[in-house]
Length: 306
Image (tube, rainbow, N blue to C red; front, top):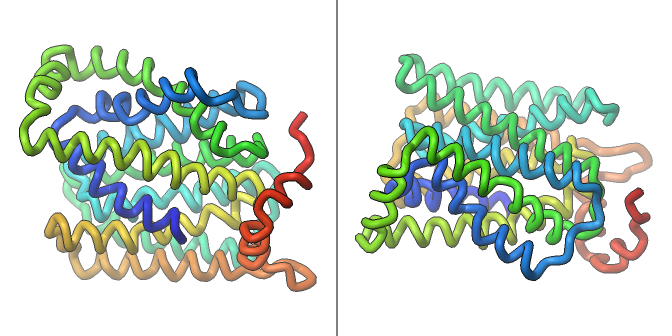
């Protein structure tokens, strides 16, 4: 629940950053400080390098390339917080393809959430509005690949994994920005950073890097490493509750009536999915709460990763 709040407000911070910097360059700026800190001060995580690279590629690059691109081309911050939650059904389906159990109730919850996303998409009919929507959905697919990489890595050191994942995006994103956005556009965004808009953009970068990534993603990685992807991922669909509300209050965004209906349907989907009990009364939400309470004791019981 805490991650859902932190990530929901994060869309307001992203909006502020994109007001000053071009989208691909913003992705590089988001990860660069964390990459420097990771290389200099953080020991490498207890997982194979392939999982660090796949996590960085899916979560760090593909998700944010498409999300920032979509928001820069017209996707409202509040609706972006909803549409990006396509990652949850993508994660559940990909997890099922890799052998995780998909119960009928969890499958129903995914379908209900997809219906909610489809309702939102139906309200963005013209090409100029549809393209940002498609880009944001592709960002959700990138997030899903990152989720599965974390799940397969099963790291007992999620903070280290999160920090070292940040080493992957900066250089490729800087090169992409130089090729696509050009040195002139990048330079202009840097020279005008002392304006009021630039100051808010820098604060947005601080929030996305420190609060949303180090704290939010660290907690998320911890959960994904210890519970089935289909149990954890649906909680990300609660992010739009915070995102839409924050965008309404702070940015004056007013989604259409049917878009609100779509958001409500998504929330119903996550409630159905996360309410799935397991055999012998082992409920995943209860199990998660107990794991959080046990803290280091549980980590000590976790077997080492080959």
